[in-house]
Image (cartoon, rainbow, N blue to C red; front, side):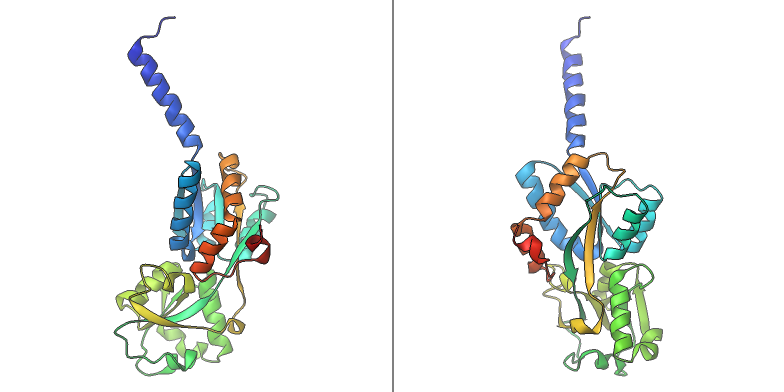
Length: 259
């Protein structure tokens, strides 16, 4: 069979496109990772030539979508529970569960705010505070942490009518930044992001005031690109990426820091 030149070029193009597609993976990532992950995926692409397409949202919603067949290769959860649930359901690649970081929450206000954050969470009972942005605790681990901290401070029930719930922690941060809320309880990683760090200030919420936000990722059994997914997970474990995560305020497990 004789194939003409243009046909050969078309065939080569299709093969190359197919190979290029095989080098791509898609990840579902908790929205606290948005800015750190942009840095990480850019480094991975530069070093390997392989692309990572990231979608950000709440961990609980992603876990539900994955159970319903959403076609992701890796899931980065903002807590261990959702990743473990998928593992227990047989939806993850055996042995791929990896705790990559621990997140932290802070209380954040925009630069023009006159609210004094020095007293800590008790300031939220000030009459000037009418709206408090948190992530929806029903499916967002950072929202659950915020609720736990307020409960420990004994002010949750007093304040819950003031909550403005974000679908995820990124949306909660947007509410605080835009003025839709007077103050936000948000991820430290977002407070340190290029999008927010010069637009307001924050105080940390003591880590003994809420359960540790231990975060984990898993490769999904349904992944069509397991080799690249495993390569990306190995990249995540490197000392260079541990440093990126620390830059965004995450605590990194010791085993990762020394690999």
